[in-house]
Length: 407
Image (cartoon, rainbow, N blue to C red; front, side, top):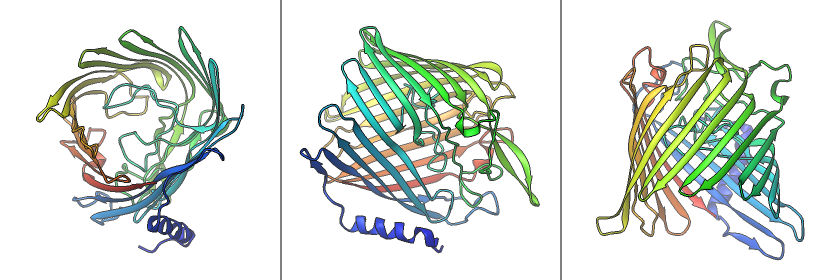
């Protein structure tokens, strides 16, 4: 595939960095630090694509850069952070993208912290699905697991008191979810248009509001949150485009109340995420209940094995955006070798109790030397039928190899 002319200079820049990545820069006098990673990825698709427009290449390579710049001021000045991310993909033009994950100013004082700019915030405790994590939008071209997020413009005030921490959020600009292009793998029945429809006349500029209280109560970590604004989950409506059809995202206004908790009892963690949402048709509730028990000191006494089990229940109706995790069970493991290389493996199947549809995954990571990290990820989509939510991905089992150089 020919590289688009507008990306030639970016390829050159990344090649230059790959040829001689600088060591960490930390200058106490100047108050700055530069770090980050350069990564090379190759994704293997063993099956032929389902749709004619999709690339039929077995291997789908890409390369990317994710630097981070931190500046801090003397006296009462803010700490400044900038974290861009660039990926160049060989086959899917939509997966070739650039995003600002973070570009923020942070003021920290006794009892309060203020962050303004673009940031990332994570809420949640469970492993299989993150129901309550609603601040940042999914970066859908990176992966299908919902772990990768776009940077969100926001102002976040955190108040820390004896009764817990209170986070207040104002988000003045909405980020639309990203999707693979028509030629990309891991896409739905039809390509998704960039021209989205909004319930609010203000569109992307309608502000969102959120608040979350969190506290540690003995062995329990508890979070209670509320959100009011544009839903991060769009409806995908069919629309005619030329001689074919495509999907148009429709973003509605929702309100959401959520609770997340984690209780520690010895080697066992009990986890909960639950939420109630209005705005997607009738008000509905959803929840995930999980347990993780760790066996310490296995084998030679160094490694730990965590056994995980989670149950997912989502009572959204036909009027809400579909979810693949409405009545599912996850059983998995987390193996940490606790060696010098930091080797770890996470995996297991998520089984839909209604359809029998199964998503099985394994993620493994290991460090090589001081600056190199290699990872392997595989996802299999099994036993789908025409009524299953992930039926259009049935040909898109994949195996991903990633090599990262940290600086």
